Length: 162
Image 1 (cartoon, rainbow, N blue to C red):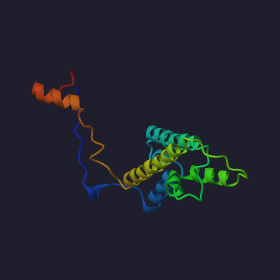
Image 2: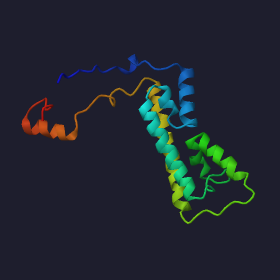
Image 3: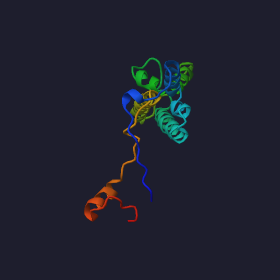
Image 4: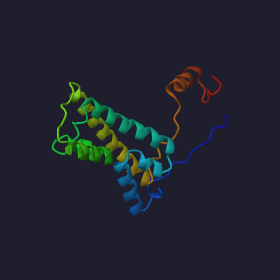
């Protein structure tokens, strides 16, 4: 199998989006998890991130009987990091005349929604970095751990046949 040698790009040679495009892509990444990656043409990652963040968020909200996401809670700061879904859910639950009591799993649900918000913050940072032209070193394919061990044992550079 032919090995393709990749060129390392200096930080000054990075080509990213313009300032307005970076802002738009980052804003979309916050509003809808995965939308920033979608705009950067990383479709598979975008769908996976969308499903992971919103799945975790709505599963946690369901454990809390959909009452744990509201504006009156200090936890809304992390809930807000999940984007438009948290605002929509908060508006719906604030309009209810009678708030149902959270289930006994409410604390676990709250933690799950916080984790979803924190995960989306990391995804927003990733979109921002990629829109600015990076990362390059992280995108380089690295041999797997097992392949590196085989290379040491066999003393060869290419273990593609094993």
